[in-house]
Every structure is written in structure tokens, then in C-alpha cells.
Image (cartoon, one colour):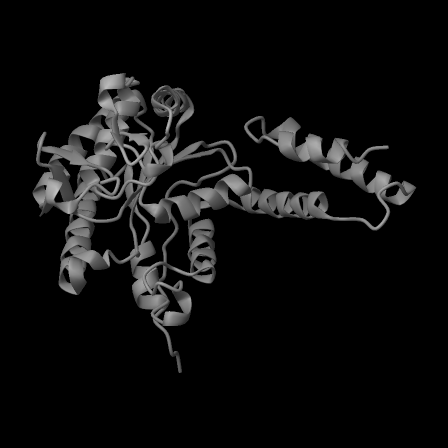
Length: 328
């Protein structure tokens, strides 16, 4: 007998590898999967604006990247000792006004350059709920702990999501007709909306995504991270202490599903080699000056150089620097 409902994922008609740069944008679930790719030296840019949750703010972030928008000093605000902008996550907040602005514009500039080699866009919607600043009627990506009375909120309709995202997808396809867009819906519950509000929000997102996939069948796809968490890992041992976020084991499991679905054999084999290199670099010898350890270092550097010769997008500078520091 089977005592679980495992989500089966059919093979996608394309693969993600070490030669196909990917941009991850959206909720903190995006951060988790994108971080694993970066840790494994895969070419990925993760959340240039920081974590963004709703489809309209994610849309605005991508529009800014496409246009290489540059913010000005009058675009940032000051509260509780920090300068900030409502389009950016709190990690960009800074007590220095000029540094805050510079960091935001640098992030956009780097992301804009990344578009020149972009092959995969991975988008994670977290919630369909929007927050509007009453003073300007503009949608914010982050409220920056400003009092709730300053905002009003609404749920985006399926039609609204499909309309704004159809126009955005068209702009991306004009740049690269072969771009692959992978949509996911975050399995993280937005409990502030209540149980019913969270379900309504997630349902709106899932329906909207599938309408977009039907509209762009050659470019848009869905990865069922939400369904894996809700139907396969439906046990509190797979949740973090807040009982809302996936645990590290759950993230590892979902990454395994993602890897199986999208990575080809060559990339999986290379992942195994990189894992061995990471273990070698992290090794702490009792006596680093022995000839055996020096030979071990040189062999590891040779393995890195072999990979670099085949995959120019892989950056091992941090590992090489650490290994070189151990050479006697």
C-alpha cells in the first residue's frame, strides 16, 4: 500500500544547464531554489529587487530591469533611521541615502546586463494580495513596517494578472523568442490573509498561471512546487518552526524534483563533480604542510581548471583563492 500522494512531474521539452543562465524572481521560495543553483555554481541571478510577493510588483520589477530604470534621490523615503524605496525589499534599506540609491540602481543595471544572456526566467508568485500606498495610490512590493493605516489592500483578479503578464511576456519574447518562463506558486502560506484568504489568493495565482501557459505554450511552463508541498509533503515535520515555511528538508526534496525535471544528465554529472570540489575545499587537514595535502590541493585546482575550460560561465574564484592560500 502507498501512504502518500507523490506528485509526478513529466519531463519538460527543454533543460536547464550550466550554459543556460536563469533569472529567479519572486517570493522567498525563489530565493531557496535560486540559492541552491548559485551554491552549485550554476549561472543564476536571484531576486535583484529582493523578495517580491505579488504579481504586479514582480511585473514592475521586470519592467524596470527591461528598461534599465534608474531611480533618483526623490524616489527614496526615510523612516526610523533608514532610507528605502517601496519597490525594493528591506535588504536595500540603508542609513546612507546615497548608498541606498546606488545599491538599488546597481542591482537594476546588473540585472539588465544579465538579460543579454538570459535563457530561463523562473517566476514565483507568493500572493495575489496587493497593498497600495494611500498617499500615491501606487502598489508597493514591501511596506517597510510603515503603519497599516497608510495602505489599502485588494486581491488581484485572474483577469488582471493575465492582462499585465501577457504584455510583459510579449516584451521578453521580442528580445528572445526562445526564452523559457517557468512559473511556480509559492507553497508558503500568507497566514495574515487568514485560511480562506490564503486559499483564495493561491487559487487565483494558479488559475492565472495556467491561462498564461495556455496562451504561450511554447514558452511558458508550470513547476508544481505548491502541489508538492501541499499534497506530497503534507506533514508538519516538513515545515519550519513557524509552521508556514518549508523546512530545509522540504526545500531539499523540492529541489530534487526540480533537478530531476529540468537538469540533463551532463549537468547532473557536473553537479556531482562540483559537490566533490566543495567538499575538498572545505576539508580541514590536521597538517596542511604535508606533501600529501599539497598534492590534494593541486589535484583539486586541476579539477576546477578542467571544469572551467569547458564551462566559461562557472566562477570558481572564491574556491581557487582559498586553495591557493594553502599552497606552501
